[in-house]
Image (cartoon, rainbow, N blue to C red; front, side, top):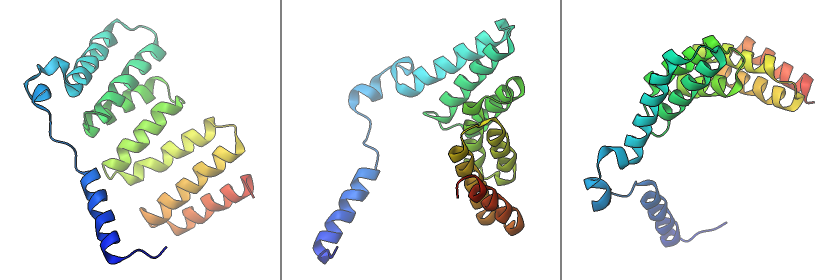
Length: 166
């Protein structure tokens, strides 16, 4: 694809413009906290946290922690608090795959790469589908190679992926 310099510049300006978030509208700026997206998310997190002491069943408590963590992660972007809730959920329900995935995303966002391989291993143990397991081994290999500089571990993970999905 051969683009003219003007066309390329125009395309780049369009990409730049699309990546800039729009300014809040006047309605949104004057809206009470409870009606904004972040305000609703914070209210839901508080509701989950308030329901936790009442939850005697561990999986229900794990789901409440998961819900709070997910809201803290997106849209609030509070990865530290999200990680705490994901960890609490994982303690209560160690093989809950959505929790493992959320905790993995948060640890990567926080740069805590060395804590991710055990999360991948936990998901690999709970996954039956060979293609999905191969993908997880491949992701583990990339993480070990690119972030943790563990070439031997990366080769072992890639070999496991190939064995599952030749």
